[in-house]
Each structure stands twice: as structure tokens, then as C-alpha cells.
Image (cartoon, rainbow, N blue to C red; front, side):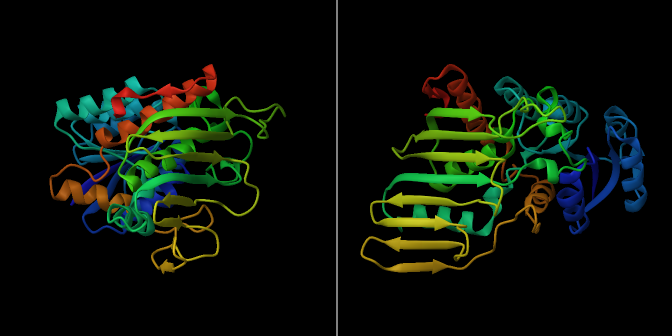
Length: 347
């Protein structure tokens, strides 16, 4: 059985990591730590685990062989590198890190230490997304020409473990990036996965239009991001991420091909709907997508544990996520400088 350490006991660990580890017969949570030591102690007592006051103390525990890194964005790289150097395998939450240099450092450290590094890009594991990838590869809608993919909800202030406008997601010093890092990275990574293509250029606008902090002023990170992505296979499309969808959550993708189009996780329809150019409509039934209000098993924890048990590369490795992170940082630069930014490393 694999001894797991939980680093960061906030909402994502409480609703996803911890329950899914508890559901996996090959895993046992043996330790946890958090900046809020009372929270860590309470969770540890409930789990029969040890509570530590620091990351270093947790990593020195010989019972811990792998960790989930569920801390704030600005600490992902530091904590992950420490864990890898301490001989632990790592599952790190998205976004991977806050600079491409830190992302590359994490990948390099995992390789040099002979440890596994997986990133929590769980959208790839949603049943309809995996099926859509198969259908696209099989040519069901012909050659892909364009797409639009969106992820939006009403924002993290109602979902965070410490809800309200004081949430760390709104603090630029801690979060560094806003909705682009929270939701945009999901759909950036996903569109590459579904299409089997990489983003090679981006034209983006990241803006703050509605979210305010405790002082009533607009927050210091983006609450909306709109990107035009150009793919290495010739397709072009839009990726929209928003914290200002004050209604139903939107996590949909539409792909347009030479033989028809495919809608994935659209509201009130089958998970996949294919409309052929001759008029035929095909509905493909598969699992529903997770939402903040309807949390289901993501598959991320099982995939992480499987790669450890089977001693193989993770399904979603740090190396594999670098292309999406390059697109995120290129989009931020595009917005800041008002230019189209090419990503030669993704060609």
C-alpha cells in the first residue's frame, strides 16, 4: 500500500484528493500539513494520519512515499521540487507553476531524481472527452477546421475553503494568475488532447471586468480570458475562461470539421452530439462532466496510484503538460503586449 502525504488541506484536497485516495485500495493517507495547522490537525485526526506543521517535516516521514501538492499557485514549484528531491512521487494540482521556467524545473527535477510527476489536468479523464478524442482521430467529422471551447462559472469566492472576497484566488501575490490559471489551463490542455494537435500561436485578451476584493476595487488578477489558438495541424479556434458566468456553469466544446461538427458537454444535451453535414444527428451517451455543484470521481487519483503501482510514466505527466503551460504564458504575454505570440517549442 502506498503511503500518501497531503500538502495543503484546502477545498480541492477535501473534495477530490482525500475522498478519492480513501476510495482507492492501494493508497493510505498517512500524513498531512497546511498553513492552517488547526485544519491539518482536524483532518489528520479524522483520517487517522499524522499532522505536521511544515512541508519539510512531512517530507521527512519515511511512511510517505508520494504526495498530493494542493497548495496555492505560487508554491507549486517549490513544494514539488522539495518533494521530488526528498524521494517522493508527486501529483501536483493545476496550474503546474507560475512561470515556464519553474514548470521546466519541475520536469527536470523529476527526471534527475527518478521520480514520477503528474499534473491534475482531470478534464482529460472525463469520459466524453476521451471518447471525443477517439472519434476525432477516427475521422468522424473529417478534418478539423475550427473549434470553440469554454469553461466558466460564477467564480472561486463561493467555492474556496475560505469563501468570500478574501479568497487567495483573488490575491495576485499568491495566485499570480487568475481565471486563466484556474479554468483556462484546463481547456487549453484539453483542446490539445482532444484534437491531438498543439497550440503554436495565440492572440489573447485577459481582463478584469467584474470581480472585486474586500476593498471594493477590481481584483488584481484576470476574471475573464479569451484566446484565439492556432494549432500545428492547421485548426484555429477560441478558448474562453470566465469567473463571471452568473448562471449555469459552462464546460462545453464544439469542434467543426469538413464532414460535420461535434458538441461536447453542451447544456441539456447528450454528452456528445455529432451533426453530420448530410443532416444525420448522432447522440453519444457517456458520463457527465463534474461541476462545482456536482462533484463526482475525477479519475485523477486512481490514475496517479496506477502509475505508481505499475511503475510507469503518469497518464498526465509534467512533461506532457508543458505544451499547455507554454500556451498559457504566451497568452498572458499576448494580452500584455497586444501582439500575436508564436510558440515555436510546440511545433
